[in-house]
Amino acid sequence: MNIAGISVRELAEKYDTPLYVYDFAKIRQNARRLKQAFLSDDVEVDFYYAMKANCNPEILGIFISEGYGMDCVSPGELRLALETGAAADHILYTGNYESPADLQAAFNAGVKINLDDISSLGRLLEVGKPELITYRINPGKGRGKYEQITTGGDKAKFGVPYEKAIQAYKKAMDVGITRFGAHMMTGSGVLDEEHFPRMLELFMDQLGEIKKALGINFEFIDMGGGLGIPYYGDKKSLDVERVARETLKVFRRKVRELNLGNPTLALEPGRYLVGDAGILISRVTGIKNGYRTLVGIDAGFNTLIRSALYGAQHTILVDGKEESEPTMLADICGQICENTDIFAKDRKLPETEEGDLLIFTQAGAYGSVMAMPYNLRFRPAEVAIVDGEDKLITRRETYEDYISRFQRI
Ligand SMILES: Cc1ncc(COP(=O)(O)O)c(C=O)c1O
Image (cartoon, rainbow, N blue to C red):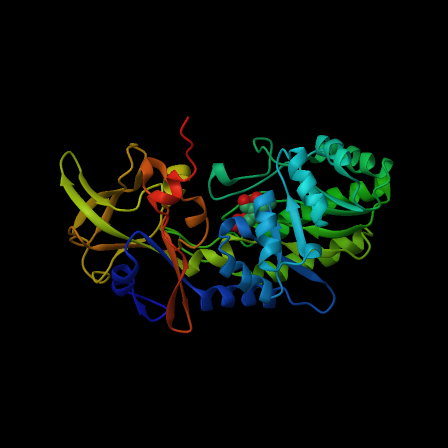
């Protein structure tokens, strides 16, 4: 198999496994396709890259050069976004149970602050009073590919419940804050085009109520991310042009009907932009024929946690045998000492042997960023393919990196 014209086998030999590899041209293409889909004469649309999906600075650089702002969720992300060249006024800081130190960092940086709760406002005011704030509103509904990534609705831990939103904005007005945005992020990995305009309609109706009660003109309305990509077993990809068309229609109509002024529409996608541009290459280290057939590989949930965390299923190809008949039924497991370190159960595979390379596709988002050195198996390297050349963009973590944090007493 090749990625962007480079053989996966050569990459594995050169950089060792497990290894993340990204096709940078594909990332740029995704960034442009989404912007193009939302291009409109009468609605200003602003894009923030959700850097939590993959925060390698070279990847952030692509989005900055394509005119994207940054969606940050921690002081660490904020610092990296700024150091990589994102403009402070094009950064949205969306915390969750923000500490005073978190809010201090966001306030000092002069970025837009999106508060997770009414109580967050009190903590922010201890630090300073920005001219503009946003609240992350939980509109009471949400949808994600898995329950674990559904971030709106009454089971979610995020945001100000809609019923308290008027009170939240009122409190901010009462202390003299004069400029406002509104934000929701209700779930991730959605492949249903209709979901996005439907959620926006519900949300904008709620904003209409806030406007009626308080007279606020929102400067921007952020509909979050959540645009899905097809993983193993999904039958379709997301038609982003249709999402854009339908969403813009709702946006225009609701702005008019509810007299919402002249807000910008904002989006903060992560997965859609980088997910399908990355693969994870791993090597088969052992095959066991016991109660079940178990194919063991040198990646585990320490490398790619999505399966252990959400039960997410990736397409897994055996290099050089992509066209071979699947003759084996096997579980695919990592080396971590946890029984949850299983990527797939009863997966059909071609005849697979020790030393074969297993390739996880759609591994560009929420992959390397969630890697951890559990069991002292260190974090993988990352390589970018740029103009037909492979370039190391993150070196493999070493034993020395890890133990340098220990202090003997
Ligand atoms: C606040 C916020 N914005 C944007 C995103 C990006 O979501 P996605 O990768 O599904 O587009 C997330 C993901 O969890 C998020 O929490």
